[in-house]
Each structure stands twice: as structure tokens, then as C-alpha cells.
Length: 491
Image (tube, rainbow, N blue to C red; front, side, top):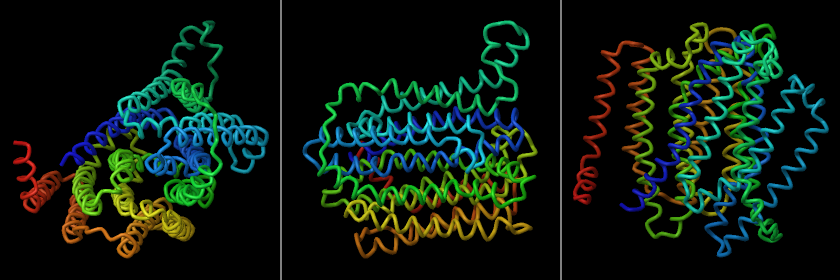
């Protein structure tokens, strides 16, 4: 059980690095929805959606490739140096090109050029710390990793609160003071991006030592192998970005201009309630990826992966059911402006979609371990195709299944298709003895209880809470032998 304890420990620390920043970022949702019109919040969402695509492109699969070759190669230092050198120079080339053509980019995506400029600098600073952060995970320094991640978000959050809440009040009471020189009316979106730039710059400074101590050696043969491994990851990443973010962009493009950004705003605000499942999935992924590679040579690796997947589904099902049962309580904490609540109907779909994505993360281990990442790229492209086709089809429709609800349907269909496709292909390429009967029962029961609670007895906690307790007992009944074994081992 020691490997599971080590995985649990690392997942908890990486989870802390993910959960705490996201908990801090919870404050940003009510902050933005209280202070910004729905259209402006929608505009910020669209800008960040574009940034997700460029984040993926600037990383071009090098993070996953780094983990693969760091565990595979004897010369770890060579892997670190080659990875950092290539990321550094591609990022510098992007910076030069993006700044040169920023006006054209702004016109093409219909965004103010100053916001494009801020976004470029955020993208560059974040790209430069990709390998330093990966190195911390590879050498198992999760505590320092967590400190840096949390510090970034604390700075970002503090600056957002200062610029959006306190600066206008200070300038109003002291119009001739020093701070009046940095205050601009109707510049809320600009302050959001300035806060991100400063936070990203601070993180880069704290990790810049890796660049100063670098020998700047570059192994061409190793680089070719890493690129060959990483390019399918890039394709997968772009496809994932389409699945996660393209719905916001398409809503802006396909809905009537007079309502588009406001619709994006309400959809994005309620989308955030799926954050609890995103937190669980993200924290798990950060801990599991190095774990999968480091245990790939173990004789019982397939059984280990099967066990981990089962417990991921157990925990994920429990989290999903709880969030859906109490969704209307969470909305009052995160989204205090009731005009945003019209999109609450998408919440169960978004939570289940992210759960499917987490299961897919488990199931996708096989093609990474046998160095067939191109299969992952193909699966991701299928998901992206489902996303695009359903969004183009459903968004323009009127009625219950149109607009942002159509986007939510597209998201769950995309991740669901990827999950089933990965399982089907993996059975032939890298058989893993999944306990499909139990996994299926946990998943179906949690989905059924969630549907009953949200769509038939919404906000009726006399029904919702007993459903949670019944599900807990069902878990205990099916897993009591395993739990008893763990207790005996501890004794």
C-alpha cells in the first residue's frame, strides 16, 4: 500500500496547490459579477479562452514529453537543459512575432489591442516557467510547487481587489494623491489583465534561478525524440482547448451581437460551479502523471492502474453528487447577482462532463506508456469534432437546447465520446483489468441520484441528503472488504 500512500500524499499536496488558489479565485467570481456588467465579464471570458489556445501552443507537448524522458533517460540533466532551451527560444520568437503583429491580432479577434498586449506578456511569462514547474514535480518537491502556485494567485487576487474595489474609493477621497496617477475610469478589464501580468512576473522571478544556473546545452537527438513524442500531445492539447474553451468563442460569434457577450457572461459564471470537479480532476492529474510513468516498469502496474481508476470513480461520483445536490447553495456564495442564475441548468452537465474527462485521464495512460501518443491525439480530435459540430448545430437554435445549453450538451458529448473511445482502444493495446461492473454501478447510481435531486427535487434537501447517505452506504457495502484490509495493515 506504500505506493498508494505516496500517490495520495502527493495528490493532496498538489491538490492543495490547486484547491487553495482556486478557492481564492472563488472570490474573483462574485467580485467580477458584482462589479462588471455581464457583457464585460463575457469579454474577459472570451479573451482568456483565446489565451488557453496559445498556452497549449507555447507548451507544444513539452511538459508531458519532459516527464516521459526524465524517467526514461539516465542523464536527467540533459533532459532538463534541452527542454528549457527549446521552450525559452520558441517563447522569445513568439514574443517578437506577437508584439509585431498585435494590431492585426486585435482586429482579427475583435479585442482591444491593449488587452492583446497584456495577454501576450502573460502567455510569455507563463510559458517560461513550464519546465521549471515540471522539474519541481519530477524531483518531488510538491511543497515548493504549492507555495509558488498559491503565491501567484494570492498576488493576482490581491491586486484585483485593490484595483477594482479600493483604488476607486481611495482616488475619490484623495483626488490629488499619488494613486490617482494609476487610476483610469472604465478600465476594469485592463486592471484584471495588469493583475495577471504582475502575478506571472513574480512567479517567473522566483523560478528564474533555473535559467541562470542552466548550462544552455542542447541535445539535438534528444530534442527530436521529445518533439516526436510531444507533437501528438500538442494536437491533443489544442483539441482539449477546443473542448474546454471554444464554446465561449462560438457563443460570441454565433449569437446575435446584442446579446452574445452577456450570454457568454452568464454561462461562464454558472460554468464556474463545476469548479469542484475541476479541482479534484486537476489535483489528481498533477499527482498521477509522474506516478504512472515512474511505476510503468512494475510487474503489477496494470492492476495498480485499475485500482486507482476505481477509486477515482468512487471519489469523483461522491463529489459530483454533493455538488449537484447543494448547487443552489454554492451559487449564492459565488454568484450573488441573481441575473446570472438563468444559466444554472447547465451545472449538472458541466460537472458530469469534467468527471468524464477525469475518467478519460485514467484510461489514457496506456497510449502514453507504449509511446503511441498519436492515438491520444486522434481521440482528442474526435472530441474536438464533436464539440464543433454540436456547437455549430445547437447554439443558433431557439428553445431549451439552444444557446449556452447547447454548448453544455456539446461538452458532455465530447468528453463522453473520448472516454468510451479510449477504453475501447485500450482493451486491445494495453489490457488493464478494470472492475467495470463496480465502476459502472458507482457512475450510473451517482448520475441517477444527481438527476433526481436537481431536476425533480431541486433545493429539497430532505431528498438530496438521504440520496447522498444512500450512495455512501452503497460504497461502504461494496468496498468493506478492502477497507477492512487497509485497517488491518495499519494496525
